[in-house]
Amino acid sequence: MRNHLMMAALGAAFLVSACGGDGGNMTPPPADCETLGPDGIREGCSELRLTSMPGGVAVRVDGMALGATPTLPGETLNWRGPFGTVTVEATLDGYEPYMEDVLLRSGSAVSHDVALVPTASAMGTLDVSADVGGGTLVVDGTERGTMDTMPMAVMLPEGMHRIEVQAVPGHVASWDEVTIVRGETSAVMISVGRDIGGSWSCEIGGFRVVVMDATFRNIVAAQGLDIVEDLAVNGNRLSSSDGMISGTISADGQSLEYTFTGPGGSYTERCTR
Image (cartoon, rainbow, N blue to C red):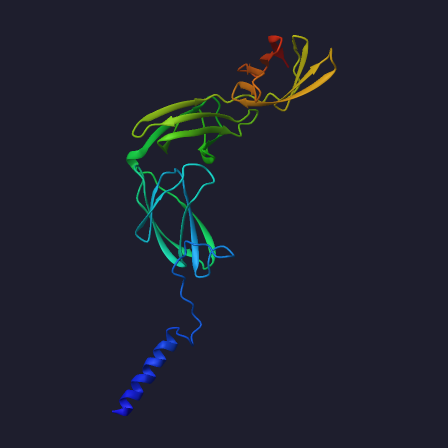
């Protein structure tokens, strides 16, 4: 009987040692990972920082509701808990359900973007045309193919999108913004502007204007001032950030109608190369 008791005691001691008792090296995670330690995230804990596009996505971590992702850039939805692998689930109307395992390391933070995929019913079609072929179609910063003069159909999630045509020889990049409605087909024509770099000759209310590489240089001869204005060129439309300059370029790129608005009024003149 004594031998049986001794064997049971030795077995219990072995189990305590193997499972990380007083003689083991493993430290269990603290009960409260929400509270930061003196050096930040506690050892044995981790922080998960979540973002999504669009925002407002309902998120669950290991089956527990966490909240909705922020809608403002730079903000995150945060979760703290023991390190290890957690399962992130997310839902938003019009998008496929999302689920992914994320590995969290002890004492550190992990950033994770919830990349949702729109459902087919939440998509719309956009027929994009350009008046000049050979350009690259770019939608929201992503290349979609090479344009010709025939419309190109692209499927897009509902909402606002930036449509741009780039890299047409002898022309400048041109863009427009389009709102997509789910289940509907929209169309946009991108008017590709000609490169206006070079010298122009015109007189506008005492100003002499020279255009060099899409920058207006206004020289006021009477006062001897040299004013430089950065000009945004979009298709055949010109504008400055301060709103004082606007203009249009002719279809053949050889003439420019330019308006300068200042304290003394507005001056409009047609300029030629």
